Length: 213
Image (cartoon, rainbow, N blue to C red; front, top):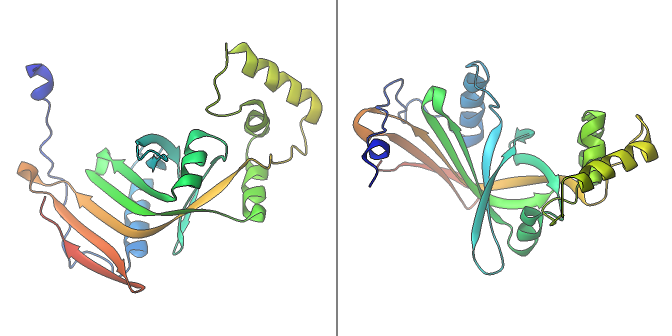
């Protein structure tokens, strides 16, 4: 064992999280923590881990960006033909994790990923910078390519086709909403005795309970 790695540790002590602190709704609680994170100068505060499972039951995870949330769920966008898109098509059960180290907080979410409407995907796609819109056409995400020039050539091609205005959304690109059935809020505490409050959806009612750290 590399003892220099094993010795890396942080004793969390910035805050506590009790049942009295928690909102009745997990969405209200997420909104509260989100607003605090937004005002804490966290770089890419909307970065979250997305975990999916393929047809063989093998999990994979990557970082994606949260683009919206409400009482229905958590929205991100991607290429539907990417590995994660194919895996969601095979098994819509997914997990999300936010880690805001500056606040010593983690939010863990489990739920079902469903495509959002074409109208919602169009609205977000049209709000993106022109380069990102062209990039959605230029890259067949997760496909094997022989060299980087393939992407650069595609980018040039689609820039010439579409120009700088009215780049349409590819039909293979759009959003998912992760509709949660479990949301856990984790607050780091001293000596690894962390606060963990978990909301679970049972018969359309959110039940909250404390978990041992």
